[in-house]
Amino acid sequence: MSLDEFIHRRQNYERSLEPINRCGTCSNDLSAEDIFIVAKAYDKGRCILETAQCLSCQMQLRHFVSEQSMENLQLYKGRRFEAFTTDPFARRAYFLEDPTCIITGEEIEKNGTFEIYTLNGGSFGDPDENYFFVGGTAIEQMTGLLSEETRRHWEGFLSDLQPSSPEVIVPTLFG
Ligand SMILES: [Zn+2]
Image (cartoon, rainbow, N blue to C red):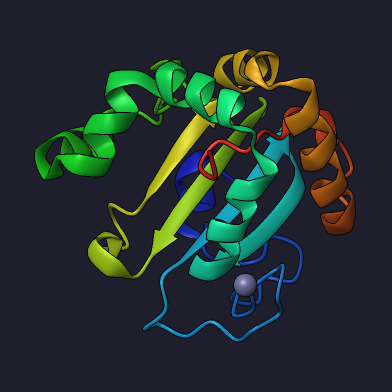
């Protein structure tokens, strides 16, 4: 599957190819009217985690992240990420280039390590402009920014979702 095809299918479950319609945490149904995030993590091109989170579960996930870790993550995310979430022109510009990490600008390779987040509903409704990538470098560096306390909580949360390589997943968006 090419990266283009992959992006096209990003809202589906990779394994079953069924649309995602249930929150991975509370199991509530998700409809087109709901605001929710679909997160997928890839390691060496292999999908190791796919999950959807409804808005209220995202809020609760924030409790997994200590204040110090939250501050570190916010600082690290930087200008590109900030512009993507607040400036429609910057968001459009992101989709004109080859797929890159929203934080570092590093190019995303299909067989590499990366995460893709799709934002559904709200002001992110346009399916052509509602997703972004986080690359391997940013994942590694953000993991280093987490406090020990946060890391412990986060690992507990992830173990419920059962990813096969939890070490390459960080609470990027939830922070
Ligand atoms: Zn939920």
